[in-house]
Length: 448
Image (cartoon, rainbow, N blue to C red; front, side, top):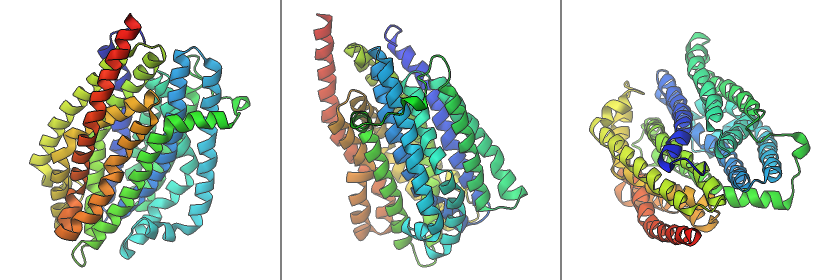
């Protein structure tokens, strides 16, 4: 971690995380594609359920990044005992919180669907998809935690094996449950739940490997100090995912509110499809940025600040170049891409194509503030990391989503994400310039 050339090291660490992130996004895309063959309302139902998935991700990433960032720094400082305790507490706590969430939500699925923004005709489909997802909540939360812990301690390959195995299983089970067993939307949900349980088992096995920090029940020693470490390292992720959840719910409401009468389900389904398309594209950049994180954590802990700066700049440039290519494809072929999910609904295709093109306009800007936020998070600069993490789908997106449609109607809903991305990029620039100068000065100081 501290000796190999930085660019090659980042690429090595990024490859398994890219594969894991792309495969995870792929089975979300597969869910939408298979369910799209049923009906527009069914597609809208899984779109509604996405907001609950972001709630699961909020806690999973919070504990995963919070404990994992501490683990990487602790290993860099040769403090294995502290890493083990934080890893165990970080794993057990989301299991318990996920169990509480499942017990509260399972008896109230219709209420939950309406809360998440489901139009009345979509509620039964949202209920069907939520049922098994809610049951699997404890395992889904803790699997996300385990994956991030393994990745941030440098064992990203095994984390990839666990996530990819679950995703491949999900893609295989989708048509079996949905069509062969005639379970419909419930089949897609059950396939996801079963695959997440399988991934959880594999990831837990990964912690038993000699090179991994072990999860041991005797090391479950929750304390204010341990939770403070998790809180500091995971707060930006928590805020980012909480705002992602709020953004998903708000988008469901606005899509239905500003749609033409009788087109509410098509509008909600269109945004669900575009969200999954953009998640799939963004997963590559996110995976590459996550490959940068353990390199950043180890080298910052070892006070090799020049290597930290080099890794950050490299990850930002590669991510931006990739998004430029992807955005160009999206702008040129938006209707054809959206039609892959639900060709039978021209309203869905029309709304989805315009939305996709708007998002592609500003999409290349996302790479810089994503990697910069992760840099701040890894080096324990919690305030700027948290600020950057909440802008894209929070501080900028939510006001844009509320204000733009007042003047522009559905067009305002469609362009809100692009406006938020542009504003977040502008906010990031002075932070990026400042941390670049700071790392250069710190690097010279250590060298001297």
